[in-house]
Image (cartoon, rainbow, N blue to C red; front, side, top):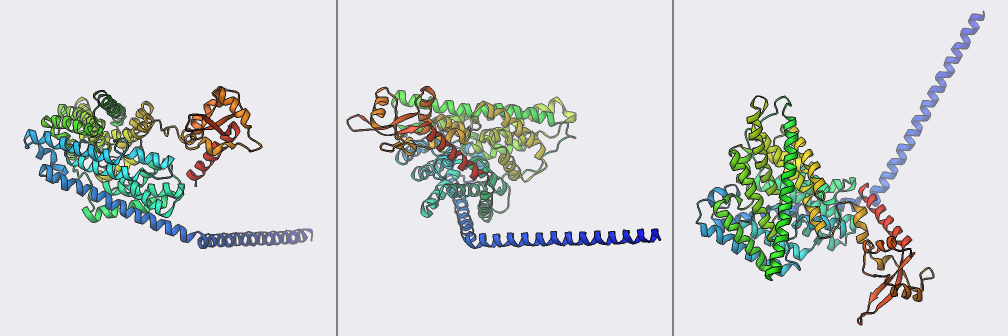
Length: 581
């Protein structure tokens, strides 16, 4: 009997436990259902109130992508057409071979006249005679709500078109990127876009332009995020991808689904034994990219010094540069134009060791002359060519030293091409993908990634992150260190000060006493210029003044240290919110 009672108790306990578990499961399911219902309701409200505007923004991104893609293709066709008129050959892949048979005086005359026209265009359309390029787009994204200079941008596009058609030794990608920025700026002005929207649309235009230039949709999207916007915010990803795909479609409608460099024998790694060699190649390419960038800056400084010393008109500077290029082209016609033919020869392994080294050195000199002479164009295509030549020379040496464990030397040319370009652009991710999409061969990925990582790690320590950010640093635009460095330059003392008459502001007599001591800042000064006053002195505030016509400095308010710090903190918070949205 006791055992029967015990058994009955156990059965009832088991039934009770199962009942409790069933009720608990039902409760959990009901809670999950109610939560899902609430989330669906919230999503519907978002769709109703924000969906149409977001969809409209995506259509704008698509339209900008199409426009930037068309502009990139038209720019390329314009170069080919004008080049055909000047050199009698519109195929950039065969320009080197064709130029070898031209009279020497023609090789000298064309770049000189081209430089003269470039100088006149820049003199009329820019305040400083300087070509606008990728660095100005980066500055626009960071400091001017995604806007770039439109008049100077159009003038720079025309100058770059003439430069590349008449033998300038640069690339077409920089001008195309800025032209895309001009398109997005025009749209932003029409729709009165705020800062976040303006930057997103600028990223869309840049992505489409790069994609249309290289037939590389993945790399185009990542280039806009990595180089121009310099963050990977989720809210910007979808419209940028849409625009990038649109630019690629425009390119493929015009040229078909073809890669830029179609090669047959890319080679393969020999059981990964060669990886240390590619690490060493990356370090070599980092040094080569450093020499490339330094030579351009040296030529720029030297050109400015000569121009000032001789009191040369600024419109004449590109003509002098063109004449020097023409003299160089008489003996080395491979420097004319973008240099695709020489790049293909290097990637195919069809150049000897001495020739590869010589061509790399001469191309660097030609690029420095072109950029230092303030002609148009960019640095990406030349860096691809110099990188391919560097990689080929390294590969020829490596395969001779260790022939039993080495693959083809052309593989080193691929890796060198990506390594130098990535170090110059400061964009290891997008440059690696560009190399993949330019060649259509993903088997070389390991070698390229290893070389790119080493070259960018080295070069970024020796310059301000990249060629473009170093250009901006030379203009006292401090973007390389991040928002914490440049946001102070975006805030004006006049906008943050407490005006005279505010009960929390120092009175006029106190302001005038500090002004008499030399402690004051103009209302137009940035917080970057004002903050050092608080570090030097113990004053809680600094008078803010405006200069009258008679030279007197009249106080209009006072800038307090706490107010400046609060404004800076708000700017940092807004930037962080955008980057993580």
